[in-house]
Length: 273
Image 1 (cartoon, rainbow, N blue to C red):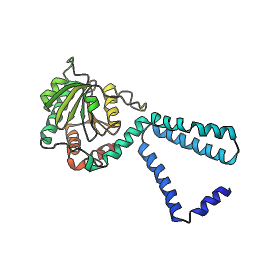
Image 2: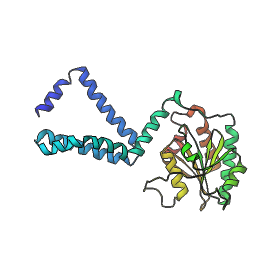
Image 3: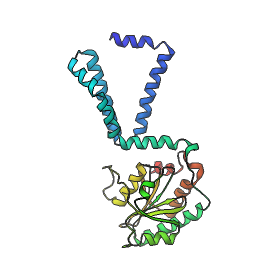
Image 4: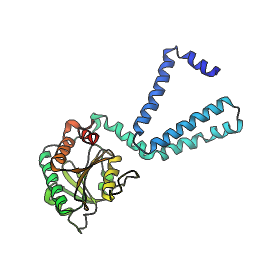
């Protein structure tokens, strides 16, 4: 109790108040960056356990337990980045995307032509019930997935996309990654989302579409082989049963340089669902 009163008495100094405010802001931003991820529950658990340990060690004289904690601190600091690796990567990626002067901007010279070809290809794929997965690279680079696929480096045309995703062709099962209005690679293998709250009807393509958007700011387009519906994934969320007009509007917002790297107008479509 005396320790608490001592701490409160020091808050009259503006430097101490600033110290407490920055500490509070740090934990608030940390929870905000981890919000919507599986790591947020682990982070909350660690904070609760940490507070309990601090209270116990300050109120009760536990020599052996205190010695164990002091000698385990290094191991704990090493383990935290390993446990939260996906969440830390996503958080740092968000911070990096918030610096416009460091980010690459896509070439929008043939944007409307690219959009029209993508929409036309998706519409035909949906009508023919041909499954497809198309990834549009944002500010975050997807080089690690491009290198694992088959290099194409060709212009985006509806005919090219229809050929790649034609059933039983060598590349139809993988993803096509579009970078700077060009098809960078096809047959790419993407990480699957680990979320277990998704609709059971969503297959591997949909889980891969969500997975890559959880780790980057890319936009994923999925054409279902079973139902012929068109879906779009962004920031770990997915919107299904899109028509040609809605798909065109989403792509137009995504390619608009004014929407990058700030919060895209695409987000309004997902919040509306």
